[in-house]
Image (cartoon, rainbow, N blue to C red; front, side, top):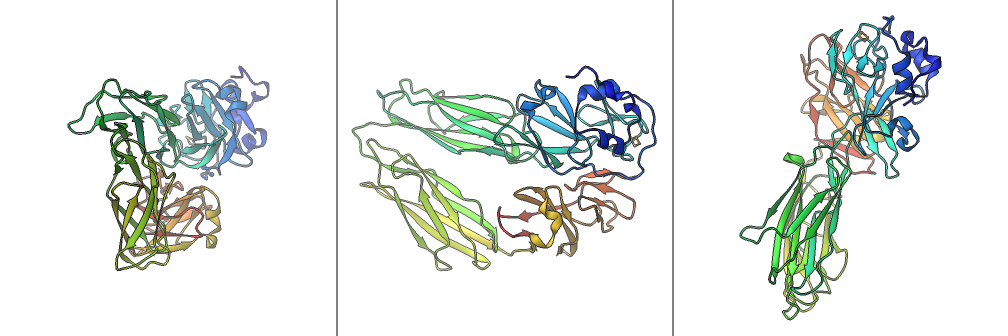
Length: 473
Ligand code: FES
């Protein structure tokens, strides 16, 4: 951290314009050393507190090397953003625009303080004391594959991601112990995915204690390592379920330890006998997988599929293996395309050389499309954090769309949750209610107003990355 900053002697009187004119990337040290507590006259209009996403590389910013290290970044003409490393691979970002009247908040070792009317905030942006106002606006932080960060845009929820949902350990009573396998845990959303919880449950009425799990970090990105401890277990198929996360966002990993008798015949086993898909007209639901194992001995190979469709439609399903020898993964993907609203069924028969086949029953429900929005008609949606208002009606009320990331959108009812007035879009990036002045960020989160208001009511958006339209239902 830079201990002092010689050019910062007048920093206590920096207004936002001066700040922007003088800064590109400033260390926290510069601000701590130079910014005083003097009261200045700040802007009366709330400036844009949600800058467009910009890229920084923490490996090139020494202040961000240690956990707890902070720096202030100004990208182009955007408002200043405080970026902090809060874990070995996790970062947090806050807009330094005061939610009261838009002055730029000073960064100090013991917290954050607005020089205008003395609102004080904790290091995580929570309002603490002084001029009553909202918390500082949290911003999205996403980690790129090369370790750099994409900072900016409205904070979107963290989304748990696993690179695999099924693991098979294959061995014999006297063969080599199976090698450990790993699952990559990622955050596919914004913010921080922390407090990772992992639990283990063995199959009903089965032997226990044969699986060891280890988590590399308590926050994503992390690696889960699974080790099968065969020991003296007899021939059999032992199963367990590893659950990552809690609540509705949790995901499971189906684990099998197959100890085969090499002298017994091969036998085909599927992880499920039924798959269910649902999607509005014109959209494509996410693919699902079926794990195909050899529950017997020897080698099970020659895997293939045959699809038989029900009476309502044909050729709407694809199914393919990653390899022809078990254990293998069958990926099933419906292509809704021009299918009309209705329910469609199919039977996938899984075949392999010299063994009895198995089947998977597939059901696809196609629902009405809802409001279809053509993205090119709304230029504000070209950028992450952009907002388009009054794009159409759902449930009799006007709808706003916001771009949450390169591949996801949110939608909100434009009825103010305070008294039902129709809100308006401000600068293509946020919302204001003309009735009592409630402000909402592009994620629909209430920011400030004389009366406390709820967040905007979210609607469901269905969007296939790369598509030119989205649906709001
Ligand atoms: S602008 Fe009034 S407390 Fe910050």
